Image 1 (cartoon, rainbow, N blue to C red):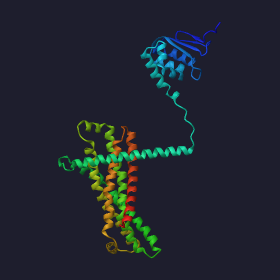
Image 2 (image 1 turned 45 degrees about the horizontal axis):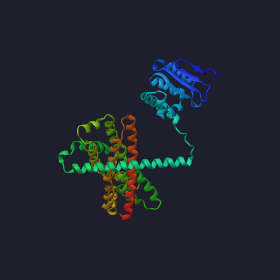
Image 3 (image 1 turned 30 degrees about the vertical axis):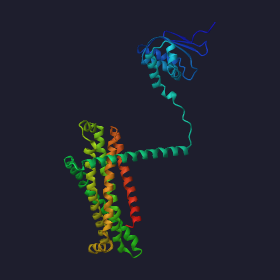
Image 4 (image 1 turned 90 degrees about the horizontal axis):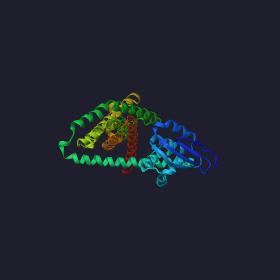
Length: 387
């Protein structure tokens, strides 16, 4: 005589006399009986055991609560069943119930299907990380060049259409990016000029060449420091503002509203900012040159007894106008790249406050990196050209 079934009630019958065990489900597997169904499923769970023979023909009604209880009972074994619709159909399950079981099983047993991750070495982890970083850099470069193309196309399209020029927006952006930044740019470059003069006086005095501190300060600020420091300040101050402004509009769906009104967000939001920075950054660079040289002149007057008139005379004798022009030539390039990166990161905001903060930080980091990289490239180019 066969042994008695392990469990036999209105919902679940388990017969352990056969191999594999036989499981028959009956009754209404619905939300109304969910506590009892869940208790039975956990009591007789086949997770980690041999797959049973399943009989579903006795099920009266089935909903998502009952399907989740069946998943608790069978675990990964149910995934094998739902992958074979002919088996479920042979057991009397209608197509809609098959789809319900398949959906619930996929949702609850995803972790059961996950393949174990093979152990990897530390070297492979480093190589994988480098590869992902390079792929991300390539993606960022692709986005950047694509956005540069969109901006240049919009600029060319509107160049000969004066009615589409947004003069008010450009002037407002010039005030925010240029006039409001004059104090911080002038103060910073003044102090850096004083520091360079102190260093030059200290080092050159050992060789009896303190007089060349004037040339050191002038060369440094006309060719490199004025435009570089100004661009870095604009990267931290203006690019972050562009990203935060456009990102907030993206989060509030204002950009979608602009498109719904038939206007181009690039024409409305990007071009005024790019044009404003193209005007502001060269002007700020000129102010930075004057402030830095002034800081160096004050230190020379106080520490080296070089009067302002002598300072200006040395500048006039030893410096050529090309040094000023070479420094100023980099300002529009830096301005364009800073504005483009700031606006691009704003458009990449996904819609949350956290995303706005992340892309604002990313804009500042990218701008500083691009500015320093382009300055290094320009310095090498000038050197090779003998300028």
